[in-house]
Image (cartoon, rainbow, N blue to C red):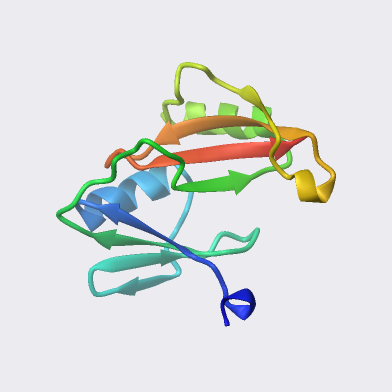
Length: 125
């Protein structure tokens, strides 16, 4: 059943080589596995996501994947130093996330990869 399954994101990219360079050089991530037409990533904090080569394009109108971090200021600064460009709003406070865990929201920031996929970085309040 779904409640017992693992969740993983699948992210479309136009070129695996170009995407691999961005994810390595800008985000500091290395794939743990290469598959025909795809790259698999397993960040140390848990979960997994895969990039897959696709002729389609992401709408980029919603967050497709997010990272929960302990220090959003340091994470955003580190990514900016590596050349990642964030949405012009910068770090914003978002109310209502994590209500089931007693949280009152999060501080978050968003950036896009080279294919327009929209990603979030958040820290619980």
